[in-house]
Every structure is written in C-alpha cells, then in structure tokens.
Length: 93
Length: 374
Image 1 (cartoon, helix red, strand yellow):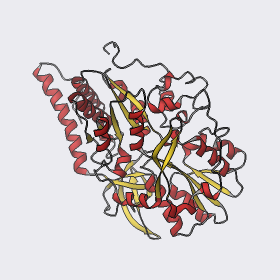
Image 2 (cartoon, rainbow over the protein chains, first blue to last red):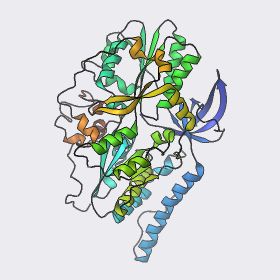
Image 3 (cartoon, each protein chain N blue to C red):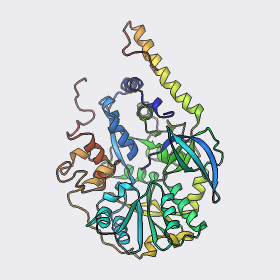
C-alpha cells in the first residue's frame, strides 16, 4: 500500500485550480497531483504514491548514501588486500 | 531507472550484510513496520543475507490486513445497494468479510470498481452525477494526503454524490501498542520510509526515549533495507536508542508540511480497531466534523454490524510479530491466496501472502539458535 515510486517531472500545469504535472517513471508518463510540493520544478525527481507527489528526492542525500556504500566496498577490498586475499567479484559499477 | 537501480546492487548488498555480521555480537529482533518493506525483504531474500543473530519480525504495517472486519462488512453492505458505484484499491476486493468479499458482491451484480487513486473515484463521481460514488479510504499516513485531497476536491467541485468509508491507521500508536504488548520481543524498529516522507521523523524521538528502542527510518530497496538494519544493529550493540534517518534522500525531519496541514483539516484522530489486534487508542483518522457530510458510514447508516472472524486464522499474532506466517497451522493448508482466511494472506504486502509466494513453507530456525555456517 505504501508503495511509492520515483519519477522525473516533465511538465507542470493547472487543472481546475489544482497543481498537476506529467511525471515520467522510466518511460511510463502519468498525470500526478503536485499540490503538496509547491516548490517542485520540471526536471526534479519526486516520490509518487497513488498519483500524488509526496516528497522531492534530495540529490545530495542520494549521492551521500551511494558514496557511503562505495566506501564500504573500498574498505572491504582494502582490508582484503592487507590480508593478502583476492577480492571476489569484478569491479563495482 | 534512476533512484531505484542504484539501490539493488548484489555485491554491495553482500558487503553491507558482511558488515552487519562483523558488528553483531548477540541475537537481536528488529521489526520492519511496513508491509511494503516485508514484501521487499522476502522477495529479495534480504533476511537470508543476514547473520543468524539478526531476526526480522514482520510488523502490522499492511493497511489491507489491519482494516477491521466491521469496515469490510460495512463496505459489502454499501456496495450491494442499488445505484452505488463502490470504488476500492484492488487488494481489498478479495479480503474476507464475515460472510463474503467484494468480488462475491460484484459477481452478484453490484458495481464494484478497482481504482488506482482516489482521484479516479472523483472522476467517476463527476462522470456519474446520478449515482452514489463511494470510495473505501484505507491506508497509513502515506495515503492520507491523497484521500484528504479527494474529499477537498469533492467539496470544491460540489460533488454531493461522492462519499468515503474511512479506515485510516497510524504508525506511532501501533509501535506503542507493540512495545506494551505481553510477550513482545522487538528490540528495535525500522520505521516506514514513506509514512515518514509525509509525517517527518519528529513523532518518533519520544517513543525511542520512552521504550529505549532504536528507531531507524528505512527505505524499500534491498540496499536501503540493509543500511537501515546495519545502523539499527550498530545502535543496539552500542546500547544507544535514537531516531536515525537512513532514507534521507526522501525523508526530512519535518516531513511534508503542506500535506500535514490538509490532513489536519480533513481528518480527526479516533480510536481504531485493528483487525486481529484490537482497539488501539487514537490510532486512526476519521473524517473531521467539518467533512462528515462525505462520510459514507453516516450517509448509508451502516454503523451497526456484527462481525465474525474465522476461528482458524492467527493473523493477529502474525501482525504483532509473535508468530511467523509458516508457523500457523492453517498456513498453506486451509489458508492460501486462493482461499484466504485472513487479510494477511490476501494483500501483496501481507506477511502470509509474501511467505506463500516466496515458497517459505518451512518453519524458520529461531535466531540465536545453533546455525551451520553457510
């Protein structure tokens, strides 16, 4: 039920006084109510639940989380090298 | 797809799981509150990556599962009325009431329609001014902004033929009820990321403090879940009990304040019965007095119903985390997704359905017991 999907805002329009937008979910474009995110701009990514945008995705936080994961990997491989072990798997994407 | 694929990498998942294994020293039971998280955990096998010390207990955060039987029976009574178009999210149609479900009522000729959004129900009310359009408004805080806006739009556009049967439920009172329940084994919570995207994280520090439990706001992709679990275990091992946000790209401390304002205008707190669990004080929302003219329960006078639950169904224990789905005697026997006894076997987010579809028919070993290294 609380499934919510990230999508990119393609355009913003007014529909009988309600702020609406076209949001692209990996190729599927839907009409979404943007009334709860008055600052959302075209090009922003947003989390959408039952056709309502409920949160703008913070790109800086997303980068920060991915950087933490990458460092965890580097640390892991670094420790393995220190121990003289081969790292398993190929290069991380 | 951006903001999804990055959080599904298998190598990183194994590294995060290995890190959790490195820091854990003794058994811990963590509850993921949200049914969407349960579904992702079981589908992606996140629990099978974890060290044996870390047990995930599946929480009551599946709105379809906890919608009280009385509400289902009221929905069935309204849907059967002539002139009604009854709209519901798809998951609700097979949820068993005392005698029937919405599919059976539809098969007998009622106009029951599956909608994806409450906006679809508003569109139906506009298109059919001669019919009563009733929307079954269930959900946690995540869905409340959408349902609240539908009521506001109905008033704005003068849709007197629109009404809602409301059964909204809230996460913080459920956490409190779980911590106070006898036999509780939960030592930390993964808080539901999308609930917090609406409500923020400000409601949780008093709970973490009062019950001395870590509460870590967590997302839904495998890496989000593992990162939430890693941070929770780190807190438990260090003897800390704080609110942390492991889903910061979506969740802020204050949440969506525009949505919170509309929710406060349209809904009012109410004691709510949770199916299988019982009444939890102030654990739900009903329509506020200013919007009672859109309340289907009043409009159709279906307040008085007597509900009868299946005696074989143990969904209440599953929802409280004291019983794993495959420990229920009826699991996979009398109760399957085709013949569900309880709502937890119906919803795609119900723990019983998640276990059934993933083929988890064998009772799991208890965390902390002797495990073979694997």
